[in-house]
Length: 183
Ligand code: FES
Image 1: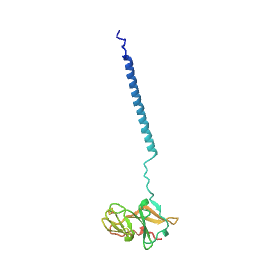
Image 2: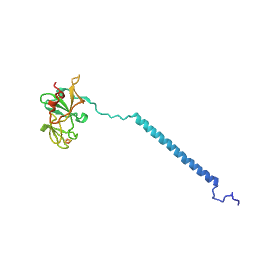
Image 3: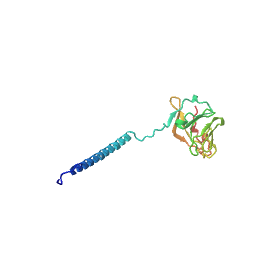
Image 4: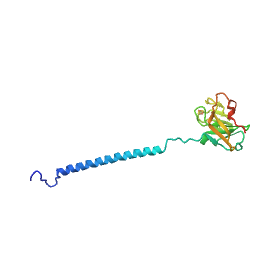
């Protein structure tokens, strides 16, 4: 038997090398296609991200809260807390003001306790009169108010872009007569 002859079961050397080359080609193909796949995915994701810009959808700063006649005097309306973070207060004399539902201590939302005629903050116990004036607890100043006016259609219109900031020791009714709406 000469050197080029093979015994039974032996694989020709060329064939072995051919298999290895074929395997290498397949691996390279897989790597190549994976790379293309990743490239397409990344670009597709970037395109989708581009189509949905980073916009923060916040509630409008101006909103209507119904007709003055909907509000009995001497009452706090709490129905706009969740959506607008605002109480609509109609005082005993019939005047209105809109107050931000935010404690001036650390920003919690106080509760309106009708039976006690006061706002009470659940976080550290600050208390406020119906006017928003702080009288107990760590709150450093009265709660803030927003501009309230009458819209053309006769509804009450709150504008949160105009704010009357509570001043320590001062009643906002006196400090900011322009925060009151008399109809
Ligand atoms: S946040 Fe209201 S008392 Fe502290």
